Image (tube, rainbow, N blue to C red; front, side, top):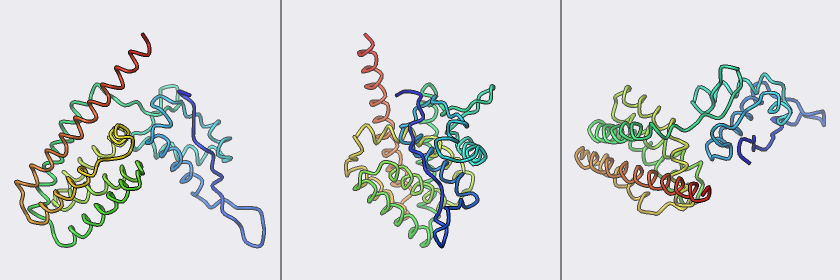
Length: 248
């Protein structure tokens, strides 16, 4: 149902000792609401434009409006919800018109950060990068799209951090965070069964970075970004055509 808040309520409570009534840990309520709403927004259960009414959410989660408001503030800081001039809140739209510009910036940062990592990485950086790549491969095997999104983000941020340029790391992190729902569409285009070759692309980048081969790292990162962009563009085009056909 479009526009409906389709997220299961969570009590956000912990059991008190000695059989007493459950007590709410301070801050846990806001964290619970944040996590539930964030998951529903990222997996597109809550569609762009869906209203998020504080009163309704308060009833749904059986909480006061204070933790609801705190959760919405956090989601707003991540760009996932938008507060309108009338003070109502909705799930942020995906600006498809700006996607070409976004993809251009994203591709550049894939290349710059991977090249930088190949030049400046330390042994400790490689430990973190390999650990996060293993987490991504496991998420792909489990077909867990949300884990794929998070581990992919963390993997590329770790590569950026290995490059040693905090400005590049900050910008790339922001781009990856802004593109989480776009990446959800990417995995959705594969029915969440990502071909092994795309995991292998990560592995090849790791190997190039570890070897200190900046040229190869740059080339692999550019190719990796290009196939993501092509896949998303193709999926959006198919989806748009499908909707037009249904409306005819």
